[in-house]
Amino acid sequence: MDSLYEQTSTARDHKLDQKEQHWQTRRLADGREFRVVKVFYEPEAFTARLAAHGFDATVTRTGRYFLQAIGTRR
Image 1 (spheres, one colour):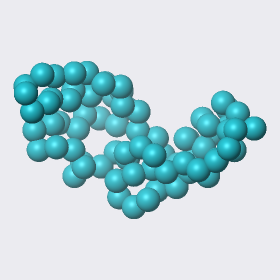
Image 2: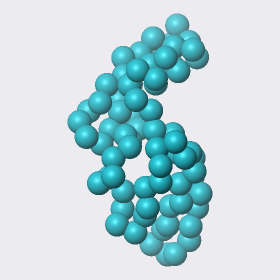
Image 3: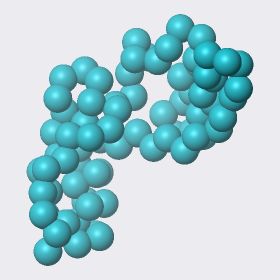
Image 4: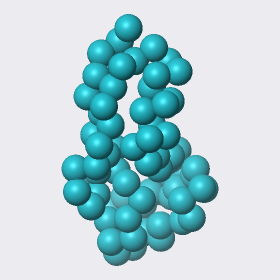
């Protein structure tokens, strides 16, 4: 399960960068900041990526905010 690219899902004090940018800044309550890797997939692309790594999976949107993958390793 992972998050989808959705403008309303980010915290008020975080900027959601462009979908293609894979680095995001996350700020903690104590003021520390970290750069994290964030890749936003669409269901079809993630299904193909999993298949390339030996998984049979069904990938769906759970609604507005999340992507869900259910499957098994071949």
